[in-house]
Image 1: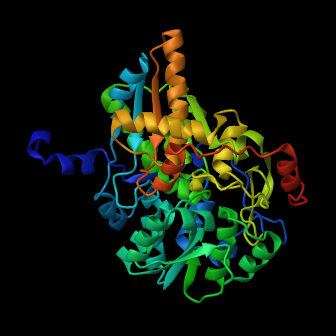
Image 2 (image 1 turned 90 degrees about the vertical axis):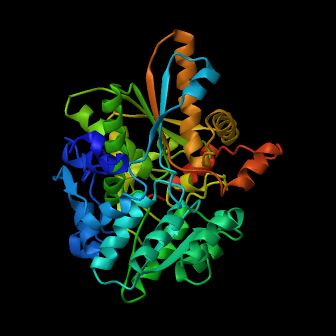
Image 3 (image 1 turned 135 degrees about the horizontal axis):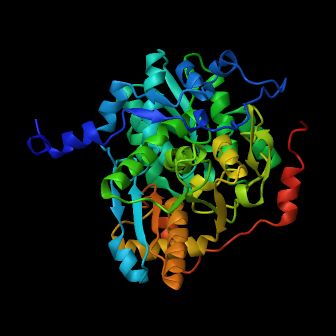
Length: 456
């Protein structure tokens, strides 16, 4: 049967949606450092991690030799509801900027969760169901991950318990209600329902919380309930593996268009969308097949790459998780309550950190008000209201496009539009009312948090 005889959607599913995830660690000559047991400082074993995570996900977490891992058919069937996601040329933005650059964005917001998070949520829920678990626990910052996981758990009839960073819980009530609609139990973090939550509230009275706090609570909840495991929406190797479908589709679309990216840009919080977008391109770089300019963009209020230290640190504030070597501000760092809740994490994925440390990527930190100015510009000409997190990438994509205008270079810029901002209207209201402020942590604040790094 020819392409013309096959319905277009089916053709895309069969020919343009990857059937395997790509594991960039397999091609990296210098591998990311292993997770360490917080008590013994020895590398975590499969049995160690299986006490907290699903067994099959643990195998993916520890596998740094298999370049391609098959996507189970049941996950592929779910992906077909919203994948392949579009790679869109931003013609109107190019015209608005008057730039000779070509600007493309990979849009991950065309599903009910509104973001890329569903790519890993459905995979992790699938493996939990395969293991015969009752349910899972997790944390969420801005709410995209919690929303995605609640959808995935509903699909597989699993219980879902979400610890939502307190400032986001209060700023994004509708995101919270979507999670509850899908059957999730949502708790503001730090809470008084866990021992680690009570301890954090005592140490930081009135805190707005952080992803590190919420992770600690979710891990405690998982390990104290029989038939539950903890799942995470970013940072871990397994998550970047699932999110590699973003980069694989992006590369396939560029090849189809006859384009080669010069600059690839992604927002950076814990590293899930960024790592997923750039992995196939980094693979080409480490294999010596191509070269790209890759830029990670983080909030100036939580600058783990640009001002952090490359060191082993706890992944959570309560110090109950394994130690990971990463760029970190210290697990006790409490970021300001910026509106990009998904980027308020003290550390960065070990894979992304190692890529950055090897000089394969650069990093920039940007002000919140500049981010929303870029978001407004994009929304007005491209017709999509972007999430605050995604808008960090938009800001730098515009910066790079304007450099091309100054030099006359016709570069191809690709950035990740990780999700929509329709549940972030409180943030947009603050910006439109001129009430949004930028917060830049002082050297003293960062040094104080870094001083408490584990003594290795």
